Amino acid sequence: MLRVPMLTRGTGNFRLALNYLSFVCGAGIFGPWYLRGTKADVIFVFVASPPSVGLPALLIGKIKKIPVVLWVIDLWPESLVAVGAVKSPLLLGWIGQMVSFIYDRSALVLGQSHSFLKSIGTYCVDKTKIRYFPSWAEEIFVDKSVTPAAEVPRQLNVFTIVFAGNIGEAQDLASVLNAAERLKNNQAIRWIIVGDGRKSQWLQGEVHKRGLEDKVLLAGRFALERMPSFYAHADALLVSLKRDPVLSMTIPGKVQSYLMAGIPLLGMLDGEGANVIRDANAGMTCNAGDSIGLANTVLALASMSIDDREQLGLNGRRYAQQEFGRTQLIDRLDLLLNEAIDHCKVVV
Image (tube, one colour):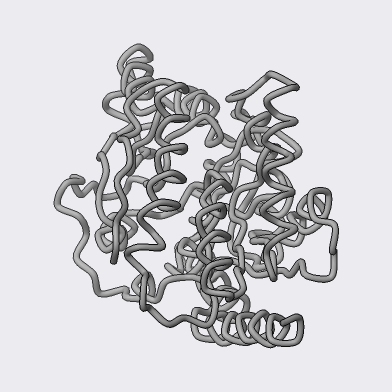
């Protein structure tokens, strides 16, 4: 692994923008030097956020005369509007132009959900190079013999809901806490939140403010390899996204790992993420932002028999292995990368 100089994120949008810019500069200046003499056939770019990570890749691709393939996990500029990060039409227009510049100069653009493809096409002149390619489910979540995390106290006869992942604006944890507050007096239900993010301090303050310390355990951040030990406490795994047309096009990455874990899912989200849970028959869903619906869904799932919940989990794992299996997706990615290489040879 090679790293380039860049500024730390710090706090605030200005510092975050400097962090993004510093990576582009660092990778653009030092990347070609670090990779001098390195032979490669293709450059594969994981575009979570921001898409500007594609700029140094295009530069290196130009120098080495090899194609660049983008894997778009987060839609820009739409996601910036969805979470309220950018409101200036002028700035959003500039970002859109940058996105078009990157997409148009890439050999292939892969979208993580079917709904992404249309949005990507808005910024990509050549629609024929857009492909669907979802995230895969990690095999570490299959192991059912893992020891439950010691950081979480064992409680018998309590229905435990686990949320794992980023704690940000998009996850709408305010609505999750509203649901937890509605069930505050139900001693048979508890919530565990594993992870951190830009709203971690806010979340901690809200849990204290609402008097939910005994109902909502904030475990903190842990490595991916530790997640199965936290999942081992779960009777249900929670995925949530705020109500927004852009976010409804997203399949949150945690959905694949949740499914592979073989534990029922609770979904408070719209669109493709909810459709996956329903198509897999792997749990229960309610509309994004519907805290009352989430509370009722928790009660409904908790009232099911253990055998019925186990079947939901098995359904989810089977679906994950069929649709999001790592091996078949890596094989598909290999074909896509070779397609980009062959196309580059033809153009040259």
